[in-house]
Image (cartoon, rainbow over all chains, first blue to last red; front, side, top):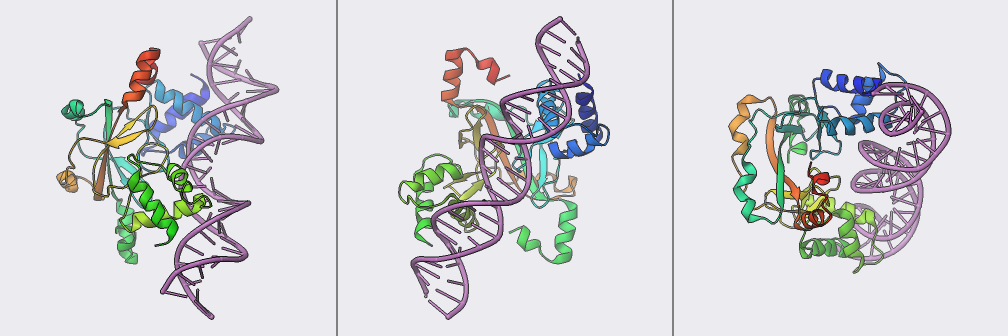
Length: 135
Length: 135
DNA sequence: TTAAATGCAAAACCTTTGCTGCGCC
DNA sequence: GGCGCAGCAAAGGTTTTGCATTTAA
């Protein structure tokens, strides 16, 4: 557990959202100005293998990281890519229902809701561009 | 509807899996050797806006395209990134259950199962490396 | 002391975009 | 004749990696 790794973990736990690697890099840089982006990526990978953070690979382009390592679902804004937790409990037995119906060995599942976050919703209403986004 | 666009659409409908842009490009190139990757990307975007194909943005790194434009769920292999349909029916009313509990305007959801496809499963058993993949 | 991790830079990977010219209405 | 689309190539955004050096256990 290097100094860098520790600060990275702390920042993820401090940030109240679901930051991308770059957002974590920017936050950590305020504490450790000489840290490199490569180090951040390498440590995020290690921390997720250690089970100290959860790596999220949702539908957006960016990987995101979650201080809460318990399985849960997310909502993602289709306009600004903001990610929040979905207020819905995890369905433990979801994959049991069809183990017979597939040749895959199913090990996990993820459920992602898509929509507009409050900010993007309001902006779209102001500008009257809701249809452009939500077609 | 240009010649290129038509061939791209046909190839997606012919390929029995969930091809990435690059896989579509390689398939189309056999019919139209001078087509460019940019054209493929541009047409995939247009075809998905026209509702002729479905663009999938699942957890993996690549965008994939689906000839079946009906909403349905997928299984993805965590080892080789192969994608298949999940044998589970679409849950239409999923997002109704918590519209009150979030500030988002929820518009859609996607459910993705993760596991090992039959091929990767067998290879892992042969090599006795199952634990490395499925930890 | 020695394996592991860092910083830096370059590469890799996937996707998008600017430009020029061709072909369709 | 104008407009959209093609092909080509370059740029863009994100993530990974090679390497020399430093650091932590």
